Image (cartoon, rainbow, N blue to C red; front, side, top):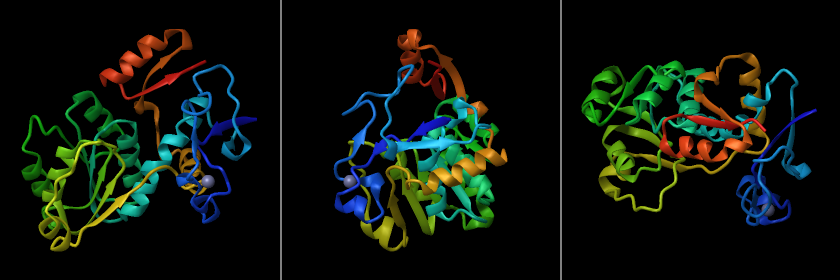
Amino acid sequence: DKVAAETHIPCGVCWQCRHGRPHTCEKMELFGHAINGGFAEYALIPDRAARKIPQEIPYEYGCLLEPMGIPYRAVEKGGVEGDAVAVIGCGPIGQFAISFSKILGADIVIGIDVNEKRLDIAKKMGATYVINPQREALVERIKEVTENYGRGVGVVIDASGNAEAMKEAFTYLRVGGRFVILGQTDGPLPINPSRDVVFKEAEIIGLFGRRIWDTWDKTERILLSKKINPEPVITHKFSLDDYKKAFQVALSGEGCKVLFIP
Ligand SMILES: [Zn+2]
């Protein structure tokens, strides 16, 4: 059988696990942290983290079901149907957020990144507009393209972890909009609670991990339906022997999703 792995390995007994939230398990183990990771020809996967995947899904796509889960949740929580969506950060998570937004019925999807290569990929993944804030006036451009959507987006999905970019997003999040944060940062996010949250009636939603196995079921069905083509996101494949080069490429941002083919 083909098997993919959930990287959040729940204990199954803590309060979170007992209340339908194993992805935020209080004693969560993670591959490559507390136990051996997946950069190997063979990996030992606890049964509670193992998922059999259909034969017709190639391994290169099967391993993407895990990173697809969190952007899928973001899009679902965001309620994107018929609305305008901005995705900050066009790494793999952002790219999948763009695709799922289109698949779940968003009218306009705006991909934001300073990396032109990633913006090109974003177009292939379904972005209606791509904006490089170093080259264009971001806020003005968003207000322009959302003229018929209340001059702002109804949903912001942050997949960048860039606090400055998140702060700026409050200026183009429409009143009554939802701000879904996936990106992680140690830096502070200075916001004005009255202006940015209360008067804006903004909903701020943080998400961490997939709903096991709900988001897996949904992303697997989308993959099988071929509504999503993950190929443009997979920019590099390396053997384990070339791990140094692989990490260099991944850290440089010159690619997008970098895969090991053991
Ligand atoms: Zn637990």
